[in-house]
Amino acid sequence: MTPPDLSRRAFLSAGGGFGGLALAHLLVRDGRADGPAPDPSWPLGGLHHPARARRVIQLFMNGGASPMDTFDHKPALEKHDGEALGPKEKPEGFTTPAGNVMKSPFAFARHGASGRWVSEVFPCQAREVDRMAFLMAMRTTTNVHGPASYKMNTGFQLPGFPCMGAWVSWGLGRIVDDLPEFVVLPDPRGLPYNQKGNFSAGFLPARHQGTVVDLGRPVPIPDAFAAPEFAFASGDADRDTLALVGRLNQRHAAARPFDSRLEARIAAGELAARLQLTAPATFDLAGESAATLAAYGVARPETADFGKRCLVARRLVERGTRFVQVWSGPQGAVNNWDNHGSIPKELPPIATSVDQPIAALLADLADRGLLSDTLVVWTTEFGRTPFAQNGQGRDHNGGTFVTWLAGAGVKAGVAHGESDELGYQTASDATTVHDLHATILHVLGIDHTRLTFRTSGIDRRLTDVHGRVVREILA
Image 1 (cartoon, rainbow, N blue to C red):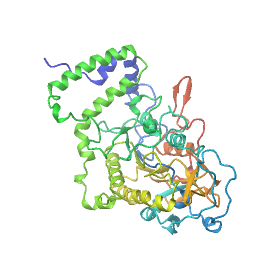
Image 2: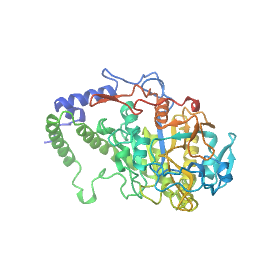
Image 3: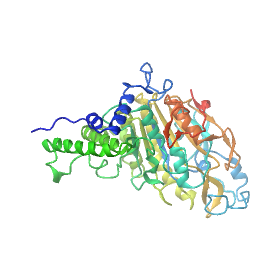
Image 4: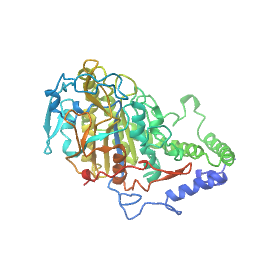
């Protein structure tokens, strides 16, 4: 006897109190119940006003990219090279006392019609500066990797809060049904500081956490397909399993009415079934032209990994994923942007690994007409000091760093803010992490002050009680 077709909605509605809440959430998301829903007259969507962007690709340089060696040209470092101008006492978060001023070992030049200064470590991104809007005076509240990474991803320094991708997924819902709303493409060498805490849904419903796809593994999405030795797990066996899991889910939900993990588990199971059809087409690059693969550097050992992930990010947003994070560098002291030991030796390899792929991503999105409704954001958790450490390294610095945005809603070729002459602290028009989050949400059609979720008696939001939209960089 073939079991009845038990849909996710049937499971939830049969599950008692939790099922009713989850079903109400689904109906709100689909615009069939009271609650916030996008205005159907807005072509690109948006929750509170018409959106300029439909999706986001966030490129995260893990470890603290050095601004004065990449995008923030500081001639004063040449003038004061070797002078003891740093703080006399070791600031909180510094791993050693500040050394003497150290000039950048890399040459800078102006590029594009905008005349932006870019270091020689980024020759490919330098050609794309007229697409970018730079925040030249970003600052954060900590010099420690873990809290700073939480801050940049969730708006808070402590664990337990939802990341930006989860907020966007919860606020706007999915574009398509056969791909995750929020995908994370980590560095195959390891996860970043805080591990999966950076991709967490926190107190939001668990289904909005990031779906981690590790392209460095033989099977990027575990368990989407039955292993070859379990060929029996198909057909009638699948249907029988679905019916059994449905009964177990109903029992579990009735006993735990406020646990959103059940909804997440059901959603993940349904998505896994749909991914059996969509994943091969999405993650297989065989259909890409030789010119595209070459542009992303997929055939070059030094760029192959990040290039492949940037190309997959384009394929994901092209097919309907709303938020994609691409990480450069694992946690730890090597193979990332945490260049304590030697800026001349450690920065060029990691910069080379991302430079060509990022430039190719921007050009490819533009050529395909996707950049007009896709926001690309280049971020890191903090900057580095203008003072030497261990001879030629640089220490952590939350005082100032650089972020750039490109694509939908962005005023291309502009810069906002300025650091001081050494690049140690912000000097004018500083931008906080909350400001950056508010701006990204604004481009997506979300008022950051109104995107709230009540938990433990508090109306929480991504920007806490802070943040302003940086309109100076918006078109």
